[in-house]
Length: 549
Image (cartoon, rainbow, N blue to C red):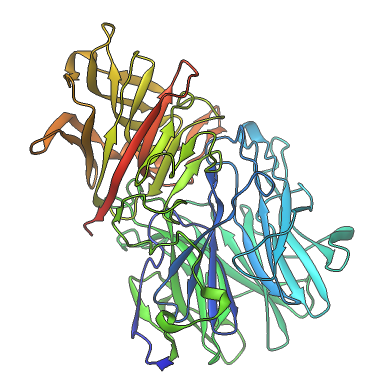
């Protein structure tokens, strides 16, 4: 059934950590793929029929066969996936970054395919590890793999430019030597290459200026695929670098898509800082912008600036009554805007992610106790293997997360509760544990750039209480924990600095070299530790997230 489209797209269309968007249309269906870093399942997908309303399809890389994040560093893992379609197959290119500190970037790239967006996805084909931000471009019978060439040598700036390698779709492998893409010289490096062909030209979209407040999408064009390219004399296609007061900042890393009616849109990442170019707790999010073409053949975004509201495309199909296999939800799927999860399904909904390992029965279960999520205690927060954390993206600067928990700790090495989490070095944890006498207490622990803190004197005795409600409130830069047993809510601990959970705070450099990167945005969720290695379980129920703005 054809319906009039909603008149406005409200940005960001994918709030919370959804960076590096790759947008694709197949028939009437639009798909967005975004980066997931150290979180399982890898590569989040969303579907739309109108570019306005987006429905989560979950993650593609949901098994170790497709993605092994064991030992993955903070903000490593899946960078900048690329989704394309040809020969009746979806093609997904992705990296699994295992190191990036000290000038090195180990970024093996892989390709998996599927005839349906829901899979099954093929065994990954190894491509190469010469550089990251790889994308696949189909040019008739030929396909080409593009990527940044990373240069580890001191004094070389980290990038040796862009290259293209022919990919043989029938043999499922790269062939021949890479060819350097010829671009005019410029200061700084460029990354995130995406090719598009229009009106006899090859258009190369790139991400320039880094991933921070100088980020931008730039365009160059050539009559041949590898160049030489000429840059758009107009400047950036979209950027907020000279407009620090805009609500949407860091605009960059773009991907173009054309609607059935011939309208063009740019998917790109943005961030919503706390204050004027302040810390970004929500991470980098996905936004859309309309694109028109000039008479001399250059794409343009109106004003060239990211906007909170932009015009939607013309008439589109209503997603609610479509019945094609391409958009049929699988068992366990829920709308990402649902605020309550009673854990009544046998699998986690697509709003949930798990840290560094897939949701497998060896450490978590949705069936061992009906209508509960059971987490067996995992390793310490500093471990890059074996954590037991189920989280969801923070999608609003003002929001509240709650969960009911039942837990029986026996030692101080048993801890379970709710967390506001960024990475192994930056997190807060409202948890139930046992003191040295074996008495059950509620405490708050935190970690700020690796510095641990817990005030044992402020522990709240719980007596014989085993089931309680835990909550946290985010109000911009302030985070507060609370709890309830059989009565009303009570505060737990003091107000905390929520900006510890921001991209900016997670960035760490030492002697001019990268020590840690902050790419993921903040998560909230449920966490269980068992530092004895015994896997003591905690049961969770009625997890809710309320976005307030």
